[in-house]
Amino acid sequence: MSNNNPSFHITGLIAAPFTPFDAKGRLKLGVIPKLVKYYKATGVSGAFVCGTTGEGASMSNEERFAVAEAWGAAMKGSGLKLIVHVGHNSLPESCALAAHAEKIGADAIATIAPSFFRPEGVDGLVEWCKKVATAAPKTPFYYYHMPSMSGVNVATADFLPLAAKNIRTFGGIKFTHENIMDYGLTLAAAGDKYDILFGRDEILLSALVMGAKGAVGSTYNYASALYNRVIAAYNAGDMKAAAAWQLESMKFIQAFCKHGGMNANKAILGLLGMDCGPVRPPMTPITKDKIAAMKADLEKIGFFDSVRP
Ligand SMILES: CC(=O)N[C@@H]([C@@H](O)[C@H](O)[C@H](O)CO)[C@@H](O)CC(=O)C(=O)O
Image (cartoon, rainbow, N blue to C red; front, side, top):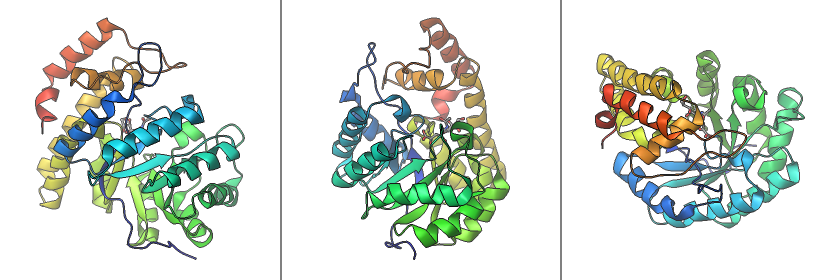
């Protein structure tokens, strides 16, 4: 068996949107059309909703349905691709999310591995993915590889051939890991048939060198103009310029990490006029003082100029 829609591909920079919450932690979906507009202006090609950055794991299925629907509505006619993350530790809940994504016309679905009870080896992981994919039989399916969150660290180069054989809708892998050797081997196994989307924004260039055609990440929400310069320089064969642009990404990621993690990253959108509110527990909201200090650090390194479209 193989990809039942070989002409479908996900390429370019895919933003992993932050889910907008209000101060009480309730969904605040009104900002989504503004984000879509910004994506269009900065050369984003799609949205990967309710993933890690979207805090899907901290939301109820009803909330995840509402978020996916809001993105679907806001992106209608935009040419952007909608990928809905449907990962869940409960298989029935994951299948319900997958079926819903298909019902609303998502372009693709993806699932991270369950992380409390974990699948056994590559076979167990493929079996889990197959069950989730079967709940959306007409929608391309992607495995979301992120060992730092799931604790499941199979070699995707081993996973790919088995998934391709057993999952009729298999479209590829979203690869959030620093293991460039496994990434390169997986790309080689995928050929032109499957998409291996890279997920570490700060080292995007190393994935381009190996042949990446697409990437998913949190900082593509607001810095795609910069990353598209990395890609353009690389495509033009100007490695020196590509590395210089990539270094700017490394520097701003280093700068926000000094003040927090996802909470600081999310607060950057507020600094750019697209406030998505605080993160949800168990993460802690960033303080106003820390946002001010982060802003000063970002200004110092020219961040606001470098991400301007
Ligand atoms: C932990 C995390 O959020 N990782 C990000 C990266 O974009 C990451 O934020 C970036 O490389 C900065 O470290 C993505 O891989 C996550 C992602 O695509 C998602 O939200 O599903």
